[in-house]
Amino acid sequence: MNRLNSIAVWVRRMFHSRGFGIQSPTDYWLVRCVINEHWPYYQYAALGDGDDWLRRKLGQLYFRIANWRQPQVITANDYHDYFHAGCRKAVFGEGNELMLLTIDTPQWQARLEHFLSTANERSVLIVEGIWKDQKAWQQMAADKRLTITFDLYYCGLAFFDKKRTKHHYIINF
Image (cartoon, rainbow, N blue to C red; front, side, top):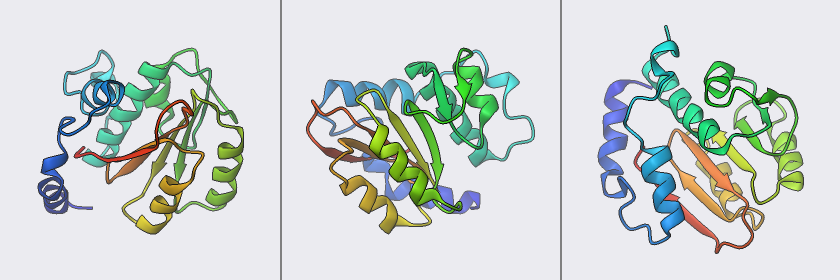
């Protein structure tokens, strides 16, 4: 994806910036302090050497999510350095705390179903590549096991807290 396309995406989503219109204090805080945090974190300088702008942008988001959630086990095939910098105690393997799933990888549907069946209220699902297959992302967001979803265009975030009312947000990331 080129830089011109990313500017077009930003312009189309500019009214979904920085938490505007979000009524939930928890979701507003997540958007302002994790998703759209612009302050440089302590590890940013050491991460992303040679990465293109999109990989660095997503990697820094994944770093902030791992730093915020502090999971014991991270299920991811990529971005290990970013996740590990955000949570040093985490190990990589199969778990139900934090999962990075890329839509166009082999067996992604089976991996997703397994994660959805074992997820709890602290689980976080990150779905990468949702702009490539919007229909698959919309079906995931409609699943009743997911309560809060964030469409960041480049990736989606899903949460499983059953005490919350189902809501889908579009965020300019």
